[in-house]
Image 1 (tube, rainbow over the protein chains, first blue to last red):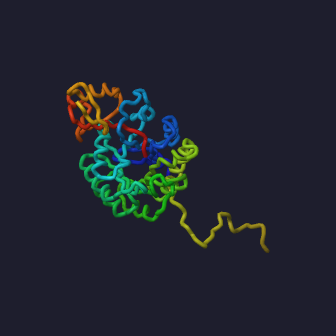
Image 2: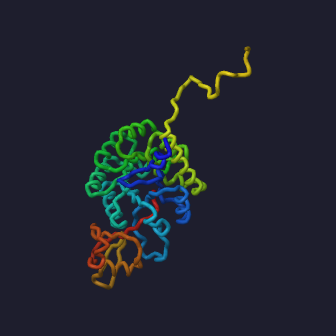
Image 3: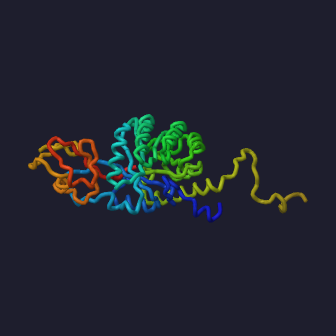
Length: 269
Length: 67
C-alpha cells in the first residue's frame, strides 16, 4: 500500500466517506462527560443513539446527550435497540428521522429474545424491506448467517453488520469462518457489530476484511473507558493496515530464518 | 380533556390545544423531540396547526445513549 492509497482508504457508507472505521455506541457510560471523552479518544465519526420516550415533568435543565455530542459534529446512527418486531423497529426509525431533521442513515436491529438479544432475522428482513422502500439508508445488525446477510444486501441495505458474538457479551469473534464467507460474498460494507471485548477482537475483525467495527460495551464497560477507546482506535487502524498489507502465508512446519544462512562464524570450515 | 402522553394519562383544563402549546406546558421548549399522535408522526413544521384533544394518545421521544 503506498501513501496515496493510505490517504484514500476511506470507509464509504451510503455515499459518504469516513476516515474512522470505528463506530461507537453512546450507552452505559458513567455520565455524558465520560461519553464525550471516550468518543473523542475513539476518533469515531459515527455514533449510535437510542430513541426513547422523553421524561415528562423532569428537570427542564437536565443535560441531554445531544448537548455533549452535537449532531453537527458527528453522524448520528439512531438504532432500534429493544425492538422485537418489524413494526416497532420501523415506527422507531420513522420517529428518529423526524427527530433528526430527515436524517436517513439508521441502524436496524430486531431482537428475538431478551435473554440473548439474538437477532430475529425474519422480522429484520421485513423491516429492512419497508425501510429501504421509504428511503432510509439501512445499516443492519444480523446474525452471522451468510445467506441472510446476502438477502439483506439484495433488499438494498447499505451495510450489513453481523454479530461477532452476543450483544454486550465481550466474547469476541466466535465464528470467523462465517464472517469471512459474508465478507467474500458482499458488495456492500460488512461491519462487525456486537461481541467485541478487547483490541485483539477488533483487530481480528479488521484483518478478516471487515470495513469497520461497531462497539459500545467493550469501551464503556472497560475499567478505563477513555483509555480503551484510544486502544480500540489503534486496533482498528492496525487491523485495517494489516489487512491491506496482506499477511504472510502460514507455513506450518516449514521454518524459514530471517537472517542469512551463509557467513556464519561457527561451523567446521 | 384527558390525553395519554408516553403511556400516562394527563388532564388539562383546556378542551384542546396545539402541539406547540402542549410542548410549552410540558417544559419541553427547545428540546429536540419527535411526536407521534395516535400513531401518526406530527412533523415539527405542523406543531402550531395540529391540535390535541380528548382521548388522544401521544408519544414524545428523544435521543438517548445507546449502542
